[in-house]
Length: 295
Image (tube, rainbow, N blue to C red):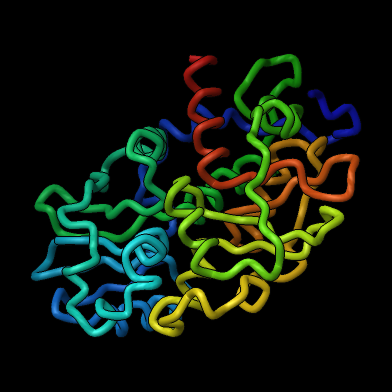
């Protein structure tokens, strides 16, 4: 489980930094703001044009709903009758919000508790300040983890659990894999039924050909393809996705997600195909559990 080849300088204590910084010190601009009367089609288009995975629905100054790439996968893809309806019909209403003066640690706890990847941030009057998304969180953690500031290497700190433990320490399940000729309807049904955000595509030898994620569903399928059964997954998957070795340190996954703006990374073992997929959700859970164990 220990990555013996790492020769990095140990950095500032992550747990303390997460507790001391407020969420307003993060980038809260990764969202689009839409009116409750906007159509689902227009909202998905706005999300795609901006390159964001979240739309916050407003009426006045406060948020009344939120739409994420996961909402698009579960409520929009394959349901063409919703595409020209008001976004209110598919949004998650009355979303939980993070107070602007809350700490990054508090936000992490909320994201893990409710399984969120996007959380509106509001001030004391309930006025929208921004959106805390997974990439803002990853950027904050990565900037701290790979900064030049250091502490004595003999001090036990949360960053050790990221820098010196590899992905085998997460006990991840085997990935869900389909063949390239599997129809999109079956893939989407599988993702919804299992509550997962990605499916790998492999050939008959197990060689990885691509990945299909909820973000692919948002950008390539939603409000575009009405007959899911007529499209093979090979036509909409992300080909040759970036991968990591399962024996690489967990910190490499955090950095790659942040740098490349991806939320699912296949992990390669000694064989031909991936042995697991690491997601933002896995990293967030691991970080919080590490902070708690070292408190």
